[in-house]
Image (cartoon, rainbow, N blue to C red; front, side, top):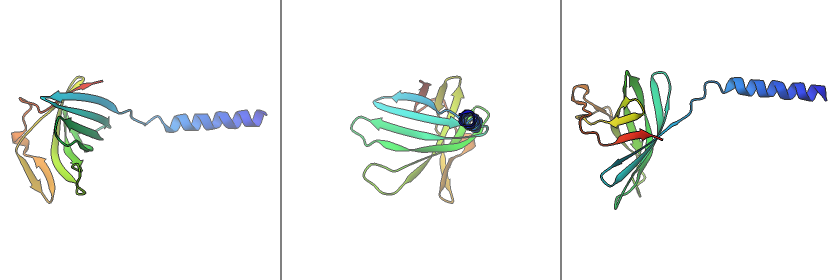
Length: 136
């Protein structure tokens, strides 16, 4: 009896110590005109990844993954998704500016280098954000 309690305690301690680095995803929602975007982000020291779904009235839903690097208050990377009723993935540049619990989706002049889209750093603007994500 005592050995089973000791064994159970050791298992619980090991399990809880292994989960100390698990990051919880931050949930965001944004509305732009008639489109609604849902964003789930997991942020590490200098990188992020997550899922994004953009649903529009009378449009196909874009569902995919975001990932990239964090530079100061800017999250820069890409959005990889499969358009509705197609079998090929698309990839587009993706940039966010963090302001407290709000994320602004920026725009810029997009280039492609070896199949990877990116924004020209000098052209990135958050003046007219596509989406303003609010944390749930």
